[in-house]
Image (cartoon, rainbow, N blue to C red; front, top):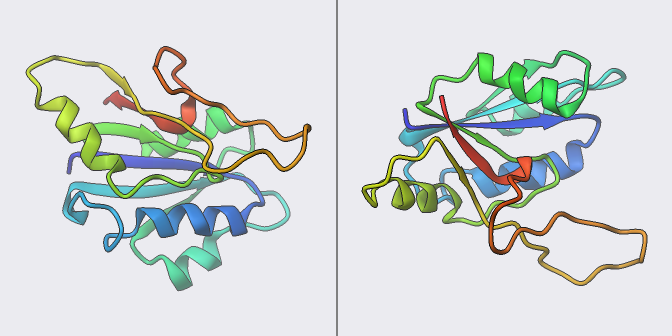
Length: 150
């Protein structure tokens, strides 16, 4: 297996479901045998386990460490079977070519330990209080779109 996609989540099943819909095998252009999806859930009141079991049987749910998102990314990495760790957040909507784009960058003859993908906002802000990380040209390594050698 090439990629392990790791998604930390905390009480945001509605957003997580939209993210997982984008990672489904009939949506991603990379064949599903080349990647797995791991949700590391550090919810304290509720979790996404039941939703995943009923609607996303291809996703591996694991209990998180009840710390912050970074600790839960590390928690998800413990369960990873892929050669590469790919991180996104539960409120992100990966493009259909997201994983395939990483493979294309891996086959260009360069040896990378970390790759970062483009992060953009798909709509105008609804209020001045709304913020989003944007990484159009690289160099920020936002955790919502990074691939790391494992």
